[in-house]
Image (tube, rainbow, N blue to C red; front, side, top):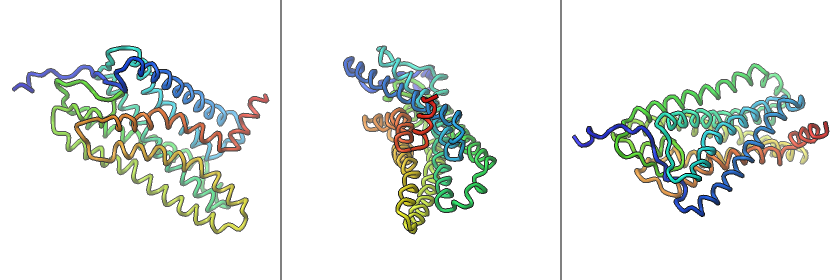
Length: 307
């Protein structure tokens, strides 16, 4: 009877990353720098790929989609986190929390699919170079990009539906700094087993399946590179794949840790640090990794600044 008398939650209160005022000021400055670098870096890549005709290739087409997804991913969480560093009571409405979960899952899962698609693109480029232009046509690239966004939308719909259909009564304090299913499930007033299984199944589809595709692609890439006679050819092949592989390790490692393990009723500091990594740090690192390790992107930047 006591649970039935509790009203449904209309807003959530975040505990955030720290309760210490001085620490919050330092975190505000740190997150502000991270967000500015994220926006500038990803916007720069999107604009460069759009205006430089030399970058109108399948690899950069997928990179532009990835940068756009990173931009949306970071913008969904970091501005709110910045605002919460400046206030004592960190709240978000139920509708705002729901929207945040939908967008986060949409762009996050799309990024998972895009990274797998980019590994396939690198596999074709290295292992089947003579057939690359006939395999990776504009139509095929468009279908792969649309499929990536569609898969992200499907996983987002399933996870959001299962998470938000649970009853949330009484306790509305989230030991986290933004809304995502693992954090929200800890407040549910009902058994979460079915929801956890649904999220796990979607995780297998959008995390583990792409990882397997990426591993197979890179196994074939490495085997092909080893068989190359010229050392220069090996170096070029590894350089084109090194940036993508670095991003894959950073993003998938943190995402799998957060979503592919048994749910606990306690959100600890380690969980929040991992969430910081894939929600804020990785979107900032992606454009830096691709621009610093990629001669084409640096060449496009030089041509644009020269104009």
